Length: 223
Length: 222
Image (tube, rainbow over all chains, first blue to last red; front, side, top):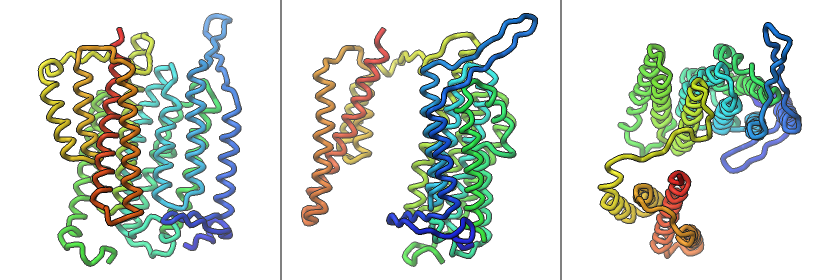
């Protein structure tokens, strides 16, 4: 499909050699929104969970230590920037790399938690993220083999073949697994039961934004 | 046809078998994960699926695919390290111990560390110098690393560490000069090639040797 009809008017292109960035209102909006959220998360403090204990009137506070707080804030900012990059990129290659970076950083954000249940869920999520790097990179490679290019500008002009369709389906599975959306969601919901709320939220936010961009990309390639 | 004329037919015909091999390997890995219930075995089997990814990407065989392989490999390594870290941290927490960043006790108690390092590192360094370039640097650096890790003496003087760093910096200059010469005056291509190759060899080898020094200083401190 024509790039302009998906994301609004084509505002302009930024040719950087092989990599051609293009700007549409949708991409600019998503880019700015995710950067704003990243900024909000960077300046905010973590929540402290309060657990009521049975059989007594005491509360049990679960707070985040300073070093853990710093590490998680850094990873959350990296996650936000990677998501912003995936929003604005004009290249399937860069998109795949940004999604893979988001997947790794998501594992990192929960890995410093001190609860066995959460670590268990993070382990399962990490396995899914690692397995889904096969469809993610494999889908990109098959699209490359079928069309000879990874630039969206070129891919939008090429009429899709069955091999492109196969590669796109693999790519969608890969993106879904790497960001932990719909069919792979179960372990990710478990991971949210930890203290340190704003940093956990970026995991969720990045997967929402990336899946929107992935669908837009698949429409660009396939129609 | 997307493939240029000068590519032989046999290379093009290898693409489909390679893709099928990749998917079969991935499928075998997934079956293994589905059957196995031991966490560490599942982790190792997941790496097989990652290798299948490398096969599928490598089957394309263009420079863009090569550019995809390298980050793919790095992503695999980073994820397997992160997940194994989670696994170690979880097991430590189950036992009620405190975890640090590197929970493993790093004791190299192997016989090969005391008997063979001189000979092996000599061969590795010689072969690395013969190779030159980045690969040679990595091989020679591996030799230096082996020697430093296995030697019993500790407490390398600070002068030696600084000296290794200085060699690395000067080698980097050699490399840049070689590249510059290559662009400014292409007639001297052989000289510039050897300048940059030897510079890269010295740089990578000294860097890896430096890593070995730092690691030993860090871990053999009782």
